[in-house]
Length: 330
Image (cartoon, rainbow, N blue to C red; front, top):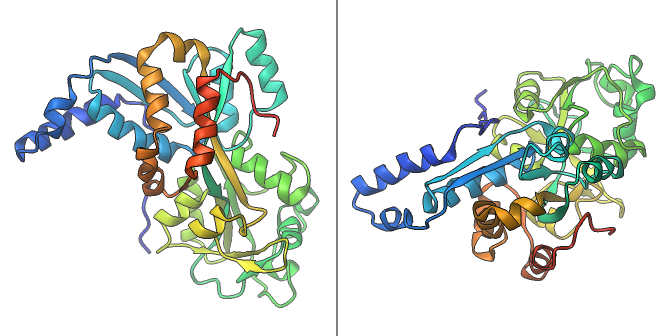
């Protein structure tokens, strides 16, 4: 069964990719990129953090760099928690996150003199996936997810028929994000009632491609990650419907995530920008503003996520313009 592997590291300069794209366009007689090299911007932008938000940064970065080929843009992936460690140590300009920054992480940033602005950027829905040959797990309740993923289930819930007696007596092989992942934090909070509370006997990785390959290769597997990774690999995976708060079984989709019916697995995604970088590095300001331009919402859709409506996007832009430091208490 074929499945796609998304490049999980973007730590090379995007400007090289843009240069190649520009050369290709020139060869085909397209004038767009020839004029794009006159932006006058240079310097470097360092981004790290969530693997879930990575596809958005990647899509935005590629287009941004076509217009700004002299800017060196490096995008790494170390999970939301890993990204905040680098961000609060002053190593990056922007930190991608699939959850809000924790108070303990704010304390580290404050101690290091790092002022930041929280910027919501898109909607996502955590997607629970199984192998396409799985014909029994059509819709799971939160209680069943708790049975699967509770810390108390470690070493005890090892077969599908322990989740539901109607399920077959097959091994329950689990794949999921590592502990530095914001997806891990959000999922465990919603499913187990405590952020970070999870069984530990599963294949964990900050690289969502590991979850993709694991579930696609194992008939008895179950895993979870952001919606974009399912969309990119839906020919090799099957999304499980989730019983929402109204008792309806809802499959993840752009519509269900946007309208909130895919609950409790719908959530906002964020990036955090260092104020000093935004104010003193024109290339960082330009990239942040580019991501918040309504005209670029299609890039978010192309990355597999759901753009904000204009009124909500305007609130994100206002946080930057008004220098609303820290995170939104809401």
